[in-house]
Length: 324
Image (cartoon, rainbow, N blue to C red; front, side, top):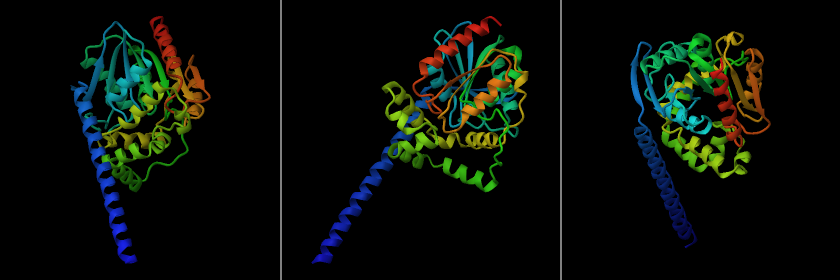
């Protein structure tokens, strides 16, 4: 009788586990469907340019335009969210998907310099003839800085937020097997969705590079911003080519003549950014003539707790650009 009881209990436990697994799978599928619907409703367009097809969305109007260059794991949707957090009202926001993200193809030359030239082609396609404020976030800082270098007359001012890849890096390039493994992991949307739901601290630490303990004590609006970024990486499979390319570039950044940038520049980072961008921000601010470093002791890669301070500094940068 004892063995029979154990079998019954075992079958019940297996049934409960299977039910929970099925429920979690269904929840992850619903998350994926919601994120696909969100992207479809966001109103992005794919424009044909001399530099290739580029996906872009834009919001607002006004005499001043801002080009928001998203980070790794992003796309035009992340650019719009970053603009919502940091860009003042009354400004026209242009948010492209960089090479390999969402509906923007990954060309043979996916370097930051080529991406910067693609931004210029995009502005031409949008018939924006004047200069723009450029905000580059995380891995997007590389192509944002290159735009200020290669298209200085079209750059009103530059903001580099938690920048990646702006100084020589001792790390080796990702080997081919590592690139394949990364691409395989990034193709697993349901797996990522499950981890994001069931183990948010793992995503916060290793993807968003922000200390989970900091997020637990953050105010509600900042926690909501982090939750949004954690979930809106989905569908990660539509971003994997860009993420792999960004990873290679971050490990072996191409040389960049930061001392040749001649536009008003602000650089932002926090010492506890788990991607280690504070040292990169210090390097960039020290080598870009006239640049200022806005540094925080805490905040992680998302600069949690400093949204208003960053937004105020960026607004001041718009005014500086007007005087250039």
